[in-house]
Each structure stands twice: as structure tokens, then as C-alpha cells.
Amino acid sequence: MENEIQLAVEKIEQLNIRNQRAMMELIKRSLKMNDDEFNKELLLAYAHQNPVHILEVAVALQYEEIIKALPEKFN
Image (cartoon, rainbow, N blue to C red; front, side, top):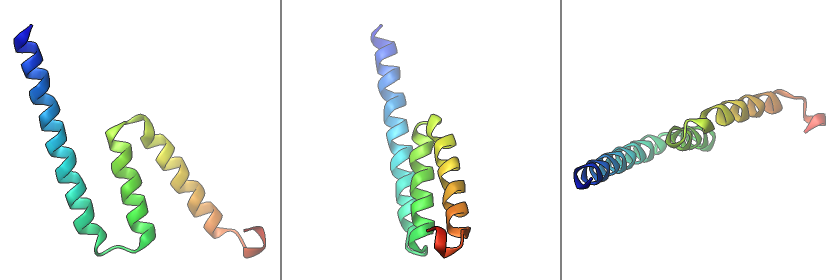
């Protein structure tokens, strides 16, 4: 049982390191992005922490593009 707990702790630590690296990469890339690009990247980074959110983000980004394409009288 103790070995299983230790293995679980190691896996969690590995995930945390990967998440931190991904966030640092996002920050580095964001320095070269406009606000819209950064927000999309941030949403996608969040979605990858929980795969269920990927669909929600994809739908939200599609609606965002549709809304931007509408004539101003509808905004």
C-alpha cells in the first residue's frame, strides 16, 4: 500500500512540473501575442487540465468568431 501511495505522489509531482512548464511556455509566447490570442491560449491551457472542458472551449471560440463576424447592428 505504501508503494502505491508513493507512486501516486510521484505521478502528481510529475503532473505539477508539466503544468508549470506549460504555463511558463504560455507566458513566454503571450509576450508576442495580442489579447485575443493570449485569451485563446489561456483557455486551451485550462481545457487541457480537464479534457471535458476542451469541447466547451472549442464551442466558445466558434461562437466568438461568429459574433465578431456579425454586422455591428446586431452587437
